[in-house]
Image 1 (tube, rainbow, N blue to C red):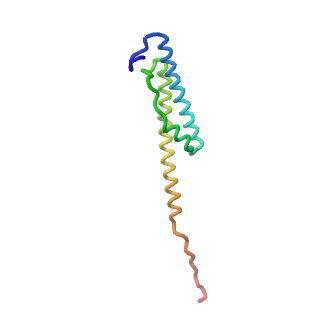
Image 2 (cartoon, rainbow, N blue to C red; image 1 turned 180 degrees about the vertical axis):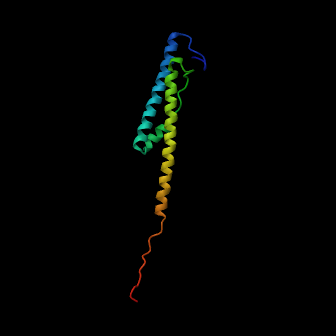
Image 3 (cartoon, rainbow, N blue to C red; image 1 turned 90 degrees about the vertical axis):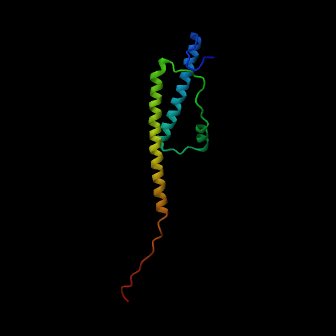
Length: 119
C-alpha cells in the first residue's frame, strides 16, 4: 500500500493508482450530470435519491492526484462549484416562493361591502 502523498513504487502500481483516480473522477462527473439535470427540470428528488446523496463518502486511499489528470480534476472542481452556486440560487428562489405562498394563504377573506343607495 502506498503511503499518503507518496507516488506508487512500480509502473503496475502507478497504473492502478491512475485507474483509481480516473474511476473517482468519472463518478464525480456522473454525479454532476445528475445534479445538472435535476437543476434543469427543477426536479424535487424522492427519498431514495436524497438517501443516496446523504450516504456519499469521499473515495479513500487514492493518494495524490496523478499529473496527467490535473486538467480533468480542475474541470470537475469548476463544475462542482458552478452546480453548488446554482443549487444555492435554486434554494433561495424556493424559499421566496414558499414565503409568497404563505403570504397569499394568510390574507384575510374578503368581506362583502353593500351600499344602500335607496334608503
